[in-house]
Length: 425
Image (cartoon, rainbow, N blue to C red; front, side):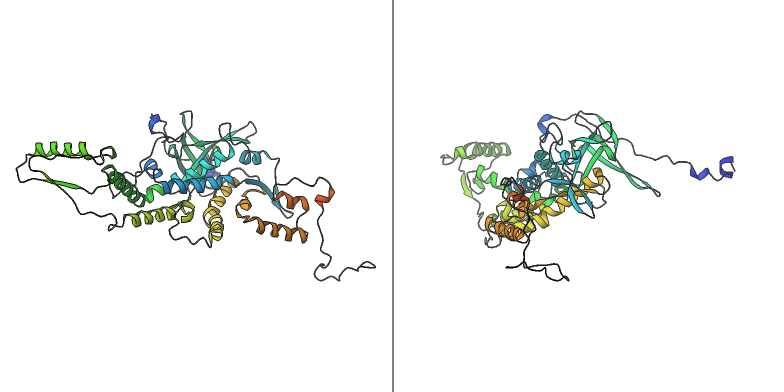
């Protein structure tokens, strides 16, 4: 038994944390394969081509109009909503408009992007990759001063677990300057999408590869159909014996003369006893239109978007569009609001403070409904004239009159006698 063990301090020595080796590397990226500034197109290890035989990755998935519109509507509407930094105490919730964190989230996240562009790419990364990562630049007082978006495929999350302190996160990341390094969680703002382990979000494209593959394969079939002048497959037959080399030459000649819209209507001269006959394939009987409609609905389900927002109106009645739009904010965007706000609170907020989205502009409804609601609040003494005018982007009155709140004279405090009426009232 050693001397330290005799003193009972042997078990108090700090343990060395075992971390995996650095895995992220910058590598060589072909600019032609870059998705905006997001790094190389990624083909997922969960599979290669889908069962339909087409490659499913970010490039091919975004080529589908329904996917483009779904991502555009979700990320665009999300980017419109302000993310307020507030203090929360017994006196209520108060916006900290002068706090630097408020300006970071609602003013200038970095020198390269506006707040709208930053929020849009934030949500796009969650939708397309399952995770969003940003490098946190800090001043000498360790206050965050800038957020720089990182390629989600150039960041690898790891955890270290200790029974006394719990989980600790760190990240192997490649920065925009090409350097790779291991960073503690305070240097990387991570927002994960739907997750099975709470550490990394599930990649929607990878896990729904087959559904997207069906849509891509159908679109490819339609393109090839019109490239062949909208005609079904043709067979060239003859009673004569044709060698394989001659067959290949006949096929090449036929395609050269007939394929492509520029050859539509061109006459064809057949020799050697060849006869052309078209195979009995009918897109109407094959329900091609119905198939493409169902694929659009699958894409709407995959991204959580009401069909009418991606212009699938085949069964729309237009009687409940307003209610569906409200459901879109609550059930589809609501989880994204909570996910991002809670992540920002966890990463940056001081004790007693939090981040919160304000989607009130998305649920204002029609002008008449808004006017009646504001009038009811004004008459009940809940808001002042200036507060009511601000809901319609009108300037304040400019004197004390605009700050005054009305008090209904026919009401009182519950459990107390009614106030005495003045003479002559």
